[in-house]
Amino acid sequence: MADVAQLAGVSSQTVSRVSNGDAAVVESTRLKVLDAMNQLGYRPNSAARALKRGDFRAIGVITMGLTSTGNVRTLDAIAGSASREGYAVTLIPLDAPTQENVKGAFTRLDELAVDAVVLIMEVHLLDTSALTLPPHVKVVVVDSDATGRFPVVDTDQRQGARQAVQHLLDLGHETVWHLAGPEESFAAGRRSDAWEAVLREEGRAVPPALRGDWTPESGYEAGLRLADEPGCTAVFVANDQMALGVLRAFNERGRRVPEDVSVVGFDDIPDAASYIPPLTTVRQDFTQVGALCVDAALRELRGETVTGVRLVPTALVERSSTAAPRPAGNA
Image (cartoon, rainbow, N blue to C red; front, side, top):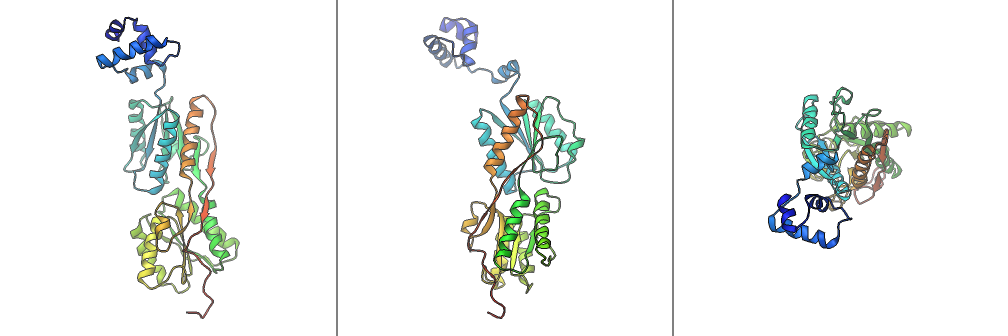
């Protein structure tokens, strides 16, 4: 900085003010300082400036890996929203949702200097009440039951499942079978609970639920079993990737969709409209989830008290994979 000041013929304080974007610096002086910086290859030390200001303009994200559609799209939305607010994102993926792993991730983020942390933790294995967190770091949780201690942002999973099941019942199906997600998943549990609740409220039989692991392969295996159920005319699948496997299994077994069986997914991934047939599914607004996460974190940083759960509504997207059941006796 002293070298820049000497070359530009100004004080070190003026160089500092230009580095920090001080609008009070005369334009001709600012240009001289910037030219000197370019000639000398000077770059302001952002870490030192952050320490001096007491904020780092960075948000950390801890997530259970990047294999699930929800985690990837939520992370992308958080990064986009943070960038628009002038914040960078530092990512720490976990290979297992253990207390030690999460504590270690917070320690790493503390060393990397972030102002707030978004914790994307979709599984029941984490007891957030037992976590010891750095006292100065603000936390927002996505897809969890950590109510009361941290602000929580999530898709309205129950609403989406209800929309899917009610759509199939309104088409005239007697009941709806269900391929659920992993047992440890919060989202899968909420979707499964809502599926069963709607059937019971409508006085319909509740078939045994099948379970997959979010992958098309698990959907295919479950689809083979569902294809052998003669009374199965409608299926609510807990995500679109498993629904893809179900569609393949039905095709191989000669069960036509939607003529013989209707299928509804969940997520509305970009490929869903290109499935054969195009998939009726529940759309999650990941962009809004990400925006609300960043909004909650920034409000906490401003000293506001942010509590409770903010749920983002879902929307049913009707395509060609659902139809009214065939009248009995028609081939």
